[in-house]
Amino acid sequence: MLKKGYKQLLAEANAVVKTVPVEEAKALRGKDGVQFVDIRDPRELERDGMIEGALSAPRGMLEFWVDPESPYYKPALGDGQKTLILYCASAWRSALAAKTLTDMGMTNVSHLEGGFTAWKNAGGDVVKKEK
Image (cartoon, rainbow, N blue to C red; front, side, top):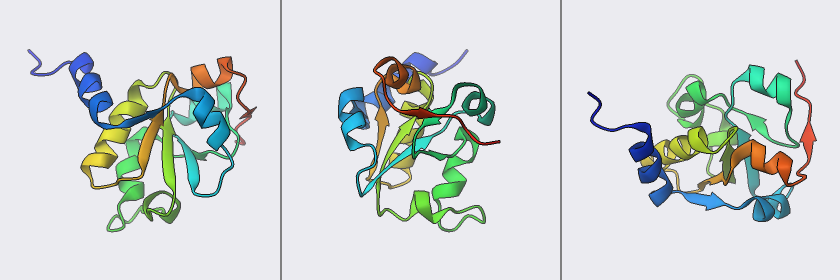
């Protein structure tokens, strides 16, 4: 028996991380100091595209890519210079990922309300992922 199910984990994450509404996110895209981060699986990006200007950081690598002590560190994600807006398909993975990064000590992390699906439905800019 699980001590916590996904619903409780999501509720806990959403209680502590900032959620950015799609219309606000659309206004922030391309602004200095803001970086969208697509945490979906690379196959999802190839199939569905991604937000223009977003960095791809698969969920399974995110903690390693933001930690300066990791051999996989990527300064574009972990240097704290930009506000990161994480997103996945429906805002479940991104909520959990934003909570994890917050738990790691990052203060510049939020996630996109409704995820990539909501972004596309609101007419947000989408580009095809290069293979």
